[in-house]
Length: 380
Image 1 (cartoon, rainbow, N blue to C red):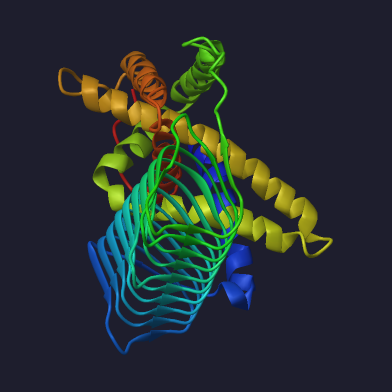
Image 2: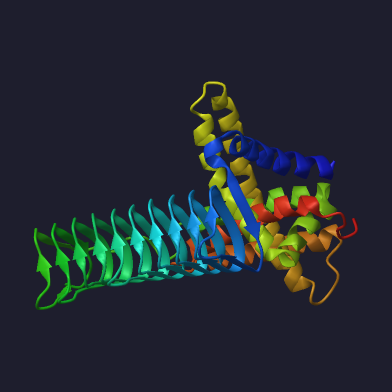
C-alpha cells in the first residue's frame, strides 16, 4: 500500500509536469547536476539549462532560460532568456537579455540585465558598471545601488543606499535610507520609514519626495500563534497517519535528504518552479484545463507533504544520535520534534520565508529522488 501511496502521488505529479515540458519545444531543457559545473567560454547551449551543484560558473552562452541552484553561482557569459537562481552567493557579471529572479545570501550585479531584476537576499549590490533595463524589485536586508536602473525601484529593506541613476520612480519601505552624491532619481521618491532619509549634497530628485510614517504595530507579540499551532497539528496528524501506513517509505524519503542533499535541492527546485509554468501552458488548450487543475492540486498536496518529510528528517537526525529510530513510535516522536523545531524557527523575523522555501525544495526533491532508491530502512 505504501508503495502505491507515494509513487502514485509523486510520480504522477512529476510525470504530468515532464509530459508538458517534453511536449512543448519551447521547454526543451538541458539538465545537469554535479558538485562543480562550468559552461566554458565559447560553449553554446541551445536549450533551457537547469543546473544544480555547489559551484556553478557560466562563461558561455545560453540561448534559452537558465535555472541555477547551488552555493556559488556566477554568470559571466550571456543568457539570452531569463535567469532564475537560488544560492548562497549569486554573481551576475555577464548579460541577461530578459528578467532576472534571484534569491540568496549575497547578490552582486555588475553586468547588463535587459529586463527586470527581482531579488530576495540579505545583501544586494548593484555595482557602478551594472545596467538594469527594467524595474528593480527587492526584499532584502541591505541594498546598495550604483549602476543604472532603467525604470522603477520598489521593495522593502533594512538599510538601502541609492548612489546611481534611476530613470523611474522609487517606492520603498526602509529603516534607513541614504541617497549619496551620485544618486539621480528622475521620478518621484516615496518612502516609508520612521527615520528621515539621509539625502546628501549632490543627490538629485526630479519629482516629488514623500515620506510616510509607518503605523504602530497593533498586533500582540504572539498574534497568529494560534493559527500556527493549528497548522502544526494538521501536519502532525497527517504525518502520523502516513507513518502508520508506510513507515519504511517515510523513513526512506527522510533519509534521502541526508544522503543526496544536492539532488534533492535541484529536483525540488525544478518541481517547485516548473509546475506552475506547466499548468499555465496547459490552460492554453481546452482539454488541458482539467489536467492543469489536477496538476495544481497534486502540487499543493506535495508541498504540504514536504513539511512532514523534512520534519521527520530533522527529528530522526536528532534522536538517531542516541537510539534507533526505525519503530513507528519513535518515528512519530521524531516527526513531532522536527515539526516543532521548524515551527519555532519560522517565527524568527526575516527567516520564516527562507525556512519555508528550503523545506519545500528539500521535501519535494526527496519525494522524487527517493523513488530511485532500491533499499531503505527496514520496516518495523
